[in-house]
Image 1 (cartoon, one colour):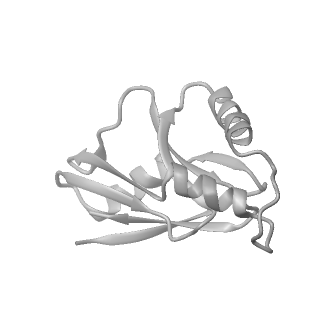
Image 2: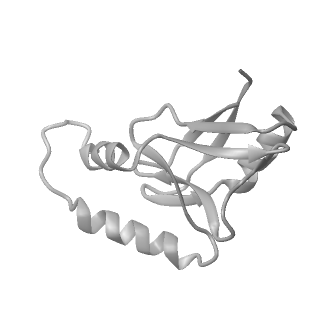
Length: 129
């Protein structure tokens, strides 16, 4: 197995960042073969997903929908970020994507998103092939 880590700085508490180009570059540096690329983030208040990357309004809409799903409520966790922990658990911290000749096999409109839920911070995304 080969692995590398990408660092992604975030600039807001809630932010969705398109990271497809970062992943493609890192993948091309790891392999030119075929296989499955697993992306994993070792954080409890961030998530990874695949969604439409053609319209930037999708990101804004997703953040608004997340807020509607998990409104600010009183949690016992003293840090005040339990909403971020919950959303991270619901969305997920890993995804797997097939690749061929070192290139991701995403659909035409698909992109890989890092979803920051408790920033700003520098986040890690680890690639495994």
